[in-house]
Structure formats: structure tokens, C-alpha cells
Image (cartoon, rainbow, N blue to C red):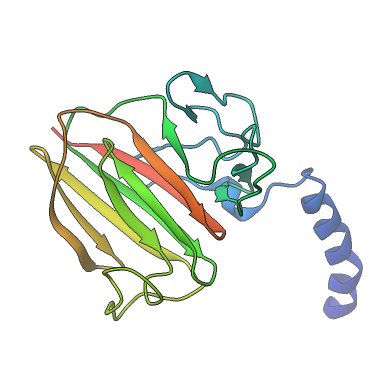
Length: 197
């Protein structure tokens, strides 16, 4: 009885979710205590291309490199007909105080992206395939991984699933948070930040 009911209800639910009429679990993200979300879960409000292209209310950037979907910011594959290969998407807001940044990412095979912390870049990619972090033990290929960045007095301590990526990345006094579009598809979700005193 329960199984037959599920078979009748599930297709309707999936249709409503695909049509955007039923929120997905990713879009219902609630930040951890003391944190604020850097996305609204629906569009690219609060983000843009520097120096002055704001993407408030838009679900996709003009060149198609970034899409807001199901509570995520998706870095899409490069289309040479639409714009430059390398693109950086930044928060409109800058962060001059000490903070903790947490986010999850999922990289397609050999994807290459980056996270900008007040402008300096922390490489974020399919770590075991390329780059200087190929020896990570807890990285999960093509699955969700947690990046945590603690910024204190101009120095960022960065980890992936608890393993150190950068112990002391030097930062300027202020700047935005950013994401890079380079190679392959990347998905970012649960972007949240807590200001420290």
C-alpha cells in the first residue's frame, strides 16, 4: 500500500521540483549558528562581475559561465561564442573583518576553479587530478567536499574536509569573496560566512 502510494506521488513531486514549483533541499539551506548565507538560494543577487556588472535578480550571468540553480552557484563549461575563457564572479560586499568562510563544492572530472578570498586565490578543483593538492586523503572525487577558511589578522588558514590546503595565505586588508570559472563544471553550495570579533 505505501509503496504503491509512493509510485503515484513521486512522479508529481519530481515534476513540480523540476518546474521550480517545489523547492529542492539545497535551496532550503539554513546557515550554521552565527553564519550568514552568501547566496539567497534562488538567483545571483549580491554577486557580479567587476568592476560594475551586478547580477541581482538574474539566474545566469550574461556569458553563461555562472548559473544559480537549486541553491547552488554552478560554474558552467566555457562557450567561446559567449565570452572570455576565464571569468571571476565576486560578492558585491567586501569583508574587512576577521571571518570564517565555509562552503561545499563538487568538481566534475578534471574541473579547475578557484575561491578568491579578498582577491588572492585558493585553488579549488578536482584535486587528485591536477595541481599542488594531489595527495589529499579525504578529498571525495565528484562528490561534495567542505572548504573552511579562517581569516585572522590578514592571514587565511584553509582546509578541505579538515586537511590543510594553505596554512598561512596572506591577504589584503579587505576585499570580496569570489569564484573562478576556468575548466569544467563546478558546483558550489552552502556558502556561508561568520564575522569574528
